[in-house]
Length: 543
Image (cartoon, rainbow, N blue to C red; front, side, top):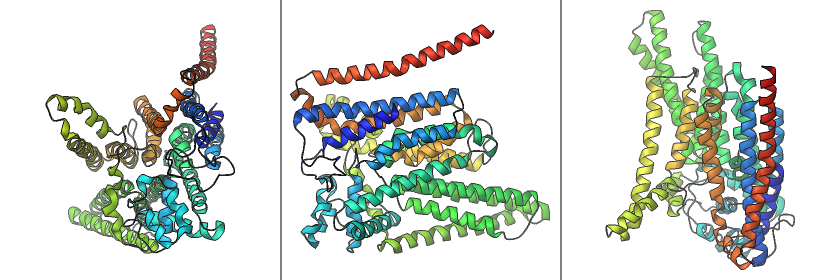
C-alpha cells in the first residue's frame, strides 16, 4: 500500500503542474511533468488523488510502526519497504516545494561571482537571457530574497551548478539532478549511521524500530528525498558527528580502564572530526549549530570530570587540574570550529554575509507554525477590544514568544546535561547528546517563525533513537503526530486547486476522494483486526 501510495502521489502531484502560473518547469522530467497547465477538470481530479496518496502513505507508515512495535521485524524487511516507498520520489520530479530550483539558482549566482546572501536569483538576468530558465523555475516569492544558507550550502550549490553546466549544458536541470543526488546520499547516510547511536547490547533488537521511524517516515520519503532539501545534508552531517563522537567516547573509556596516560591520537582526531562535522552542518542550516553546542558542552563537562579524576589518582590539586584540562579541550574545540567555519567560507568564496539573511524565511507565513496559530487564536479577542489593526504586532509578539520557549527548552536540556549527565543512557533516559538534539531540535523547529516538514530533518534521527532506547509510547505518538500533520499541511499549497473541484461537476470529486479513503482504510484495518482476533483466540486456547 505504501508503494502504491508513493507512485500515485508522484504521478498525480507532478501532472498538476506548477501552482503559480508565472513559474515554469525547466524540463518535462522524462515526460512526467506536463508541458502546459492541464484543464481545470483534470486538475480537479488530480488534486484529491495526490492528497489521497499522501494520506495513504502516512497511514501505511503508522501501520508499519504498529507492526514493528508488536513484533521484531528484520531490518532488511524495513529497508526494502523504505526503498520501495522512496524510489518513486527519488526518480520523480521535485514535489511539494520548489526550493531545489532556488538552490540551483543560488549556485548559479555563486558560480558567476555573486553572493546569494546579498543578491536575489533575479540578478541572473543581468548575465543574459540564457539564464532566464533559472529565474523562471523559482517561485516568484523567492526570486528577490537572499539565501540564509552558510558557506557549506553555497559550496554544494555552486559545485552542483558548475557540474550541471558541464554535464547537461545551460539550465537548472543539471544542478537540480545533482542536488537530488546529494539529498539521496544524505538520506542513505542518515539511515545507515543513525542505528549506530544505539547501545551495542540492544542494537540488533531496536534497529528495526529506528528504521521504521526514520527511513519510512513520510517526511524523509516525501520531503527530504522528493523535495531534495539541504536539510537532509545538515541532518546527515550532524548524525555523523554524533557517531564519531560516540566512538571517541568509547576509546576514552577503554583508556581509563587500562589506566593509560598521555596523548592519544585516535580520540583526539575523532573529537576534532566530530566538532568539524557539526560545524559544517551548521553552515548548511543554522539550526544545526545545536549539534555543535551539544558537543562543546559535553566535551567541556567530560574534560572537567576526567581531569578531576586524574588529579585524585595523582594527588594533584583537583580543581586546578580539571580546569586546565577543560580549558585546553575547549580551546581545541573552538579552534577546530573556527577553522571549519573559515574553510567553508573559503570554499564558498564569500564571507559570513548569510547571517544577516537568516530572517529571510520569516518574511512569509505558514499557518501550521505554533506562533501563527497562537496569533490566530488571540485575533478575535483583539478585535473585540478594538485592536484588530494590530494583527502584525500580535504575530511578531507570538513569534518572539515561540522563540523564547524554544530557547528555554534547549537551555533546560543543556543545564540538565551539565548538572546530571547521562552519557551512557540509563534505563528510562536517553544519552544527553541524543536528548538535546532530538527534543531541542523539535523545539527549535516548532519555535521557528515559519514551519515546514523538512525542518524536522535534524530532530527525527535523534528522536528515533530516543524512542528505541526508552521504549516510551508518548514520544513515539508525538513524533508520529507531528510528522503526519506536517506532511498533510504541505498540501496547503493545493488550496487554490481545491477550488477547481467546484468547477468539475461538484460534489462528485469530493465524494470520490472520501469514498476512496474509506475503502482503502477498510481494506487495511479489517484484515489487521481479523489477524489480531485470531492471535487472541490462539492465546486463549493455549491457556
